[in-house]
Length: 434
Image (cartoon, rainbow, N blue to C red; front, side, top):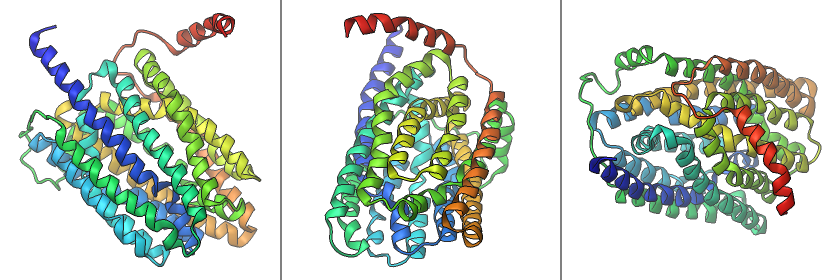
């Protein structure tokens, strides 16, 4: 290794530490509120169609401005300023949620928060891509995600327990968690000022930040990236159909308390945190494609559980399965996105990916909410919800199979079959030691 390479590796290692801190602190802050926003809307009186609007806006709003933010990040060659500014403003915008009195007000505040805060998203993706070599992207991504998961898990459990102790209005229940989200969000934003970033501006594009022509041109010259966008949109539409209704099932059908809602997230988070290091190593050894396919097809089980559950304990089982899938799948998806985007366009292309999937999630969630309202009106609450879940299940199966068309841009030292066989062979020795 040359002296320059050694210096770069040492710098990147040092700069990853603030990324871990931001993940833990920021996720602890957002974890006090994020898992409960759907329940907040339902308790404010949101109908199934309004939950469709809530979920669709939550999906689309973060994506609307990501292309100009991503292009700006690539043009100036700096990621940290956008991460700090976007995260800081988004954290402060938790404050108005303390005073909302209706689901529509909640939706409006979340939309503004998401649009402004979205400047951090493509810059964050690009920053990780800048610092992490392709051969270790699975490992590092899993570690960063694990850091975030630990923070979110602890916060969600604490907030859920706190909320059931509070006697008063729904706004009073959320006041302290929202205050914590503001304070920790500000801290996690300022931590990023410790990152030592080497500017690498891309001044080839002279177009406006709001011009899509050069973005489309870059997408067309990246066939693996384009294919990834297409299959993600097909699957994402059917995946998002059920999202607005999950909270309705949890709150109105299963009568779950805030603590039980928290435990659904905590169980999934605990499983994911436990398995993510293994997931990261496996992604780097066998590649991304096989794990992505398993992940997407496995997600068929989520709406199935929501359709058939008669107790919140069934959702805990679903959370265990979902936690396993996320531990391997999210890392594989993120690593693949970095693999198929060029360094000088990583902010722009990751923003494009988030935009097109956000639009699809918007359409799917909106349709899911209105389908839910219609079917509930005709068939009743439980059967109406089950019909939408059935459509989501069928679409997820078809959409999951489209990921078989992806192509791996790199070669990997092992295969999934080989790794599984080696793991099976180790079982007797592990049992003997036990």
